[in-house]
Length: 248
Ligand SMILES: C[S@@+](CC[C@H](N)C(=O)[O-])C[C@H]1O[C@@H](n2cnc3c(N)ncnc32)[C@H](O)[C@@H]1O
Image 1 (tube, rainbow, N blue to C red):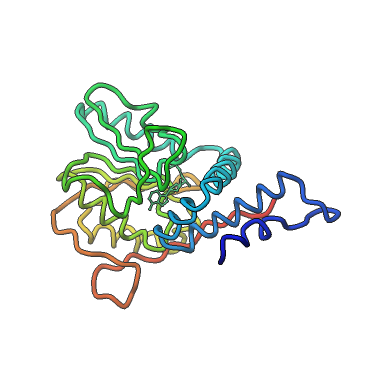
Image 2: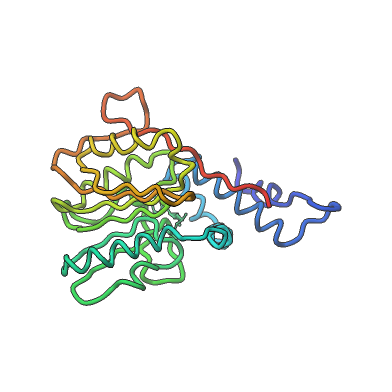
């Protein structure tokens, strides 16, 4: 879809033919959100690079969604990391798709800890490193923990898992928090396939009805190339359902 159509798509008339600012912002958010879940990470990055305002609109809308959730997935990640740090003093953490600000880094950074907070584009927070996490400027086996909090968005998300495996040290940890509906009916196969890439499932917490919280530990060095395309012979990760938010 051409970029010039963005505004017209968002300018849907609502009640009595007049759209409020809030209605428009909400339509825009849903449109961007759908694009993120139905295109590759490269296309998503291009979308935001062409118009950085879309990144802001997306995050304002995402923030409004988050407020409706009784518990935030990032809080699960925070709690888990806090416990992990008690036993692991020197840590390098990579936050994949941190959002507009480096929230985990903000709350958890300290002596003997190094954070890399990545998102697709430059934001107002100088700690956020603009980067598509399918290709990271980090050495093999250089990171202790990778966090993917609702960031396995693109249709090529398998590359993100593969990249996590590449940069994680032996016994390094991969944390995934994802929207429950995206994994409905495929959670077992999703976890099994991630294990086949070279991870051991360490924790599966499905107690929250909005999101699933998973922790894997890197188990071996033989990460194989992965794809979400079923025609290739390598390990295939299932397509995750897009997380589409309802109209208010
Ligand atoms: C739903 S938001 C979650 C943000 C944050 N992790 C949180 O829990 O509040 C997902 C973020 O992942 C980013 N993202 C998605 N795919 C990415 C990729 N391939 N590389 C870097 N960032 C990505 C998006 O730009 C977006 O900011």
